[in-house]
Image (cartoon, rainbow, N blue to C red; front, side, top):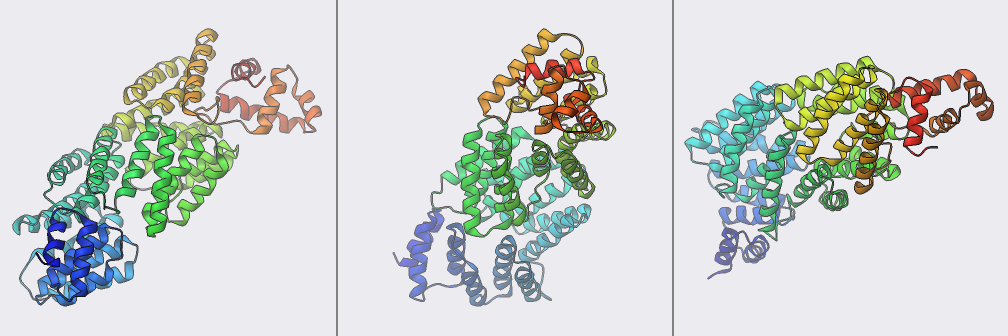
Length: 525
């Protein structure tokens, strides 16, 4: 068996490091034709090496326009994935020119994919879906599973944005049958795995996201030499573990992914990983490292909202948080993006005393939940609605809605959100005069926060008190008047009155006695 034969056999067995070593040795002997150069380029890509030069040589080695165009497409695929848009588009142009005046072939289908993706990015979701459908039809005609898989993925993502999530989910399920059955190449399988999980996140489908993340983990583990996609796998695993309360493990996975993507100079993936690290620091109350990671995510091109706005809220910078989340919502156009921002908009709006705006956000979130039919989104919508009802003075209605939200979070096994709901349940009970049940709910929430290592016992859906507000509340609880507090803290009575008003809004209470009770329950006094 020649070196080339050994390299090709290792490639077929998905032993990527061995395939790269053997095919590289054969390449040094000048023994690789265009097809084997393609294998060498793929092995280089899957073992984390630079493959651009090898794909370029494979392109030049092909003697047919179709072969050269195919290499040009995959070279563009790699470059565009790295963010090198100019070079990537240049190679797509070469591929298109190579096929000018040629009968339709499978590469024509591949060349429809960048067009379809660009249409989706620019908001022409219908145009993107139509081009992806045409590409899939070409893939079926030429029996090209890789093309069919990539086209179905793009079409499914476009359908989500067209408000047709049920069709999208059915298409993604069909697609994943082909991927898990090994009907597509490893290069395409990894890309589709990550894309399908992201689609599940867009539709707030926690069950499928969990299922496909586990499948991606198994797929990566079965190929020890694999370098790409393992980082994405760690980010997705981290997000799932965060939801289910395994925060230390989630942070370790996110940090590993961030380090890997930084080394690979993969901006979109590095930004996602840094954002996830920031989220876990914020939840744990580690505000300085959280801010640094949000900044790093932004440098890599990942917008840091809603996390950064929630960080500002935790820092007591309520107006800054309110401005940031409103601006982010103004920019968000498609429903999935808005649905991701709305829970934070409700929370921050209530903290800022903008109850009408929070009501609008909760109502919009409920509409998204109804359209998508997602248990995760329904839980978030009930949580938000309960918080707003409480702020509107409807403690009885809030109690009923919050009970439903708590059951929903419990069913999904999302302990942090379930505990936050229990804080609101405690406040609703207190407003209704049931102080004993209120203490029980707050104690149960406090116990969960301690188990998770959450930032503070007073984590709520209405924001945290600033240091000055906490100081004013302690004096209110001690029975001091606004005038006495102003004298002690060297403030004007007007400033003290504003602090007291903010405290009432954040705590969802309407009297000094209720605020005092809260302060004792939370251990501030």
